[in-house]
Image 1 (tube, rainbow, N blue to C red):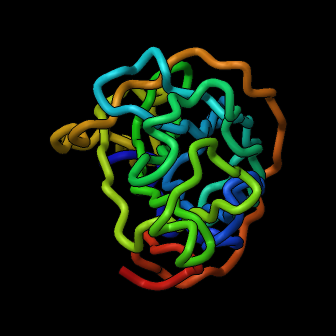
Image 2: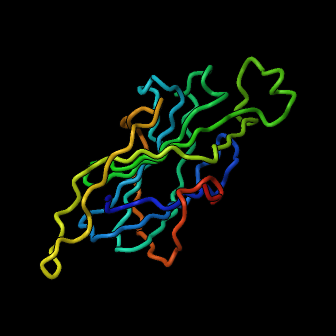
Length: 210
């Protein structure tokens, strides 16, 4: 079992204008003490099969992380328009949220994103030059989750018994979603907020339960 499990991802602004920042709230559970912070990244995949075009939009460090259910809010800029091939702007792309501990990725949550014009006339008669100001994006309601086995901290014995925190089994990798590539995203530090949040399914945008 993983020491950290994502319980819910709520996108605060979905749908939104294409150039708007991504705003979301992550709720996760930690079942054993962690010596280091958790690293979270948001990656935009414009062209499946061409990982060199992936954009790391932002990353942040969250900690210290107390045992229990925690949450934090993350805001990330939109992708750089000049790095997206013109033929890949409209239609389906993907957003991937990853979490790592000690430089080991242990989970990624991917959402398909559809981008289109905000009116029927431009949808039916697309202009030769893309008008980014008129584009809107919407994230799919069901995420694709992939988990990985990593090495967590050595458990502290308690009354002669090993502490919780043995790694869990891995699920198949997400199709057509490339591994994270180094990007120009800026790094931020956030504190995890412990709360009595009830168990929730890994969420759909706007907090809908999957």
